[in-house]
Image (cartoon, rainbow, N blue to C red):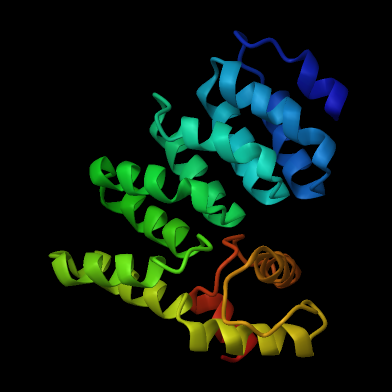
Length: 212
């Protein structure tokens, strides 16, 4: 698969390349990170770039943070959206300010995804930022999303989630109430097991399946 993705021409559309990118994301091998970053940064076929960004979010290797931040300015809107979601899955706080900038110009449904990405960032400022957004929101769907996202990253919610994940054998770290990298890894493992969309945070569907 790695050889296959490296042979795809940057200027030629290839559905085989898209399928390889998706497969590499599902496998989750860190050796795929650099080739996928190369696709994201140099390939001219937009769908390929989008799938590469999604795959990088699934692999969750911190080498992808800066390339994904740069992809928030990609000319292809679905690639920008995929990069935002991937940054939420990685949870690195270097993405905080770039995501906030991205949200200023995002359309409604891209904004919904970006809110969940923001909730996945490991930074103590996130609840306050979401609260401020909620105070100023004038759209019912956005307000509902902000409320759910805010609940997902509250200390009490994260602590309970860590406890349940530990009981189920997915988490062996400290019950801290922080959405740290080991917690996000445990959430992703659980989401993959129950065939949930990979978000790396305690969204409503994941909380329901965990019983919290």
